[in-house]
Amino acid sequence: MAAKLYTFNVTGDAFPLDMLRRDACWPVTSVDVDALADALAPYGKRKRAHTVRMASHKAPMVARWESFGWTVSDVALDGRRMAALRLSDGSVHMWGR
Image (cartoon, rainbow, N blue to C red; front, side, top):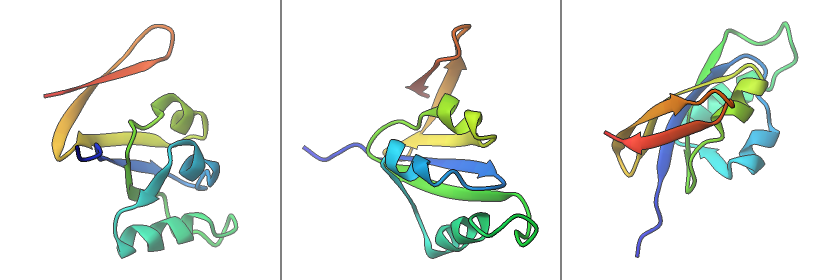
């Protein structure tokens, strides 16, 4: 049985490096690696807000990304876009469209 693969975009300024471990995720392409590297540059040397396409074998921790000021968008599971619903307790539930 093949492992599930989630892909998603994260957008923000200073990259929260710990999220690579927390979400067990990685940048999808070399362009995404470059965007992540720029987001790790010291403040004032970063070019802009960054969008990095990430991949993981588990769903992204949306609330955790948001706690660092990053947004999560375009979540897909095995290539199928996912919809998300934020509950009043702050948790996010996703399902396939």
